[in-house]
Image (cartoon, rainbow, N blue to C red; front, side):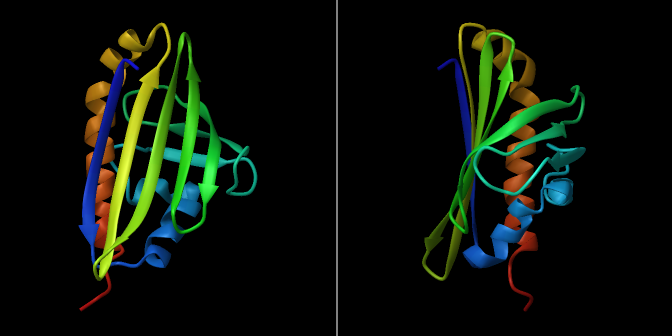
Length: 141
């Protein structure tokens, strides 16, 4: 593994408050403003379904959902020349709320190159997305 990054945030939200934001792929940009310009899924939100997304400053790329456990986690992978990018989104119950964790990793013979190219934007996008999702999913007071 050439590169790995993760960011977590605690929210008073419930798993069922977070999950609809994940499953609504066309609106990922509403909570991942620094990580996603647009996205789409070519079928149901389940493992094996493919989609396409565009991150700021990068060309659009295809991804495939590799794991989907409703109200718990989902993971996707994108094949890059000589490497693969895996992104996981995890919701865990903690106390009276949840911990939201997003992690990314790049593996493969050219991972060092891809990590250099996408590191800054991915770290910024994942961190901002987690924090924004934690806030927007919290119950109104």
